[in-house]
Length: 229
Image (cartoon, rainbow, N blue to C red; front, side, top):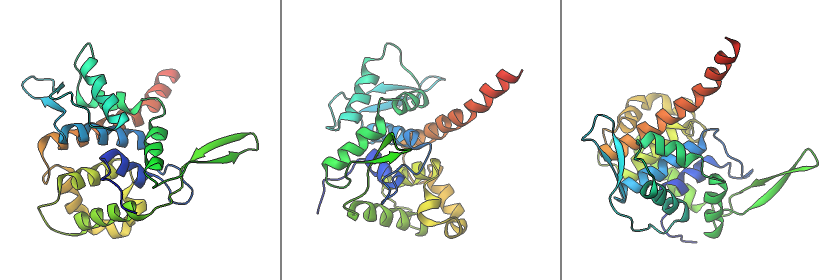
């Protein structure tokens, strides 16, 4: 079955989901999805990063909706904000949207790629899961990522570069390709994730996602240190 082109956050969600179990494979998937939303808004020229000031902040360039409920909600949040904020701040805010992962997975269910199901836990609890029913779109994504990572072409399509970078940031590349296979491609991945092969704005979206993940990962240690002092 052919589907309309997926947006970046939908592609990242497919990478993060276990195909058969329908569960999320990365603890930082919400940040990756949020970073993908920000990158989508940048690529489609709905927002821009104002670099004229010392603190780089996000401005709205075009308020025309993209047509995806989650992405459009994020665009409206930027538009309606009382104070402008950095890209990292917006990615953190996007990651906190109510039921973000379920909403993205729900759209993939509507496209006929996933199905919504429930798994019973400890007899009395249930968890919503999203097993894959059409593997075609994810197989195409894997093919693009493999070509980008294991090839040497410098003309890699920008959306694929962003997806590789975000997948690496949230720890999805090792489960997909294997640590041993990726090890010889460290320099190639460095070129991809440092923004050498993609535009500066989307490279900043990836960097902001990495910073948001680092801040979130450090928070438990900071809280523990403050409580033990």
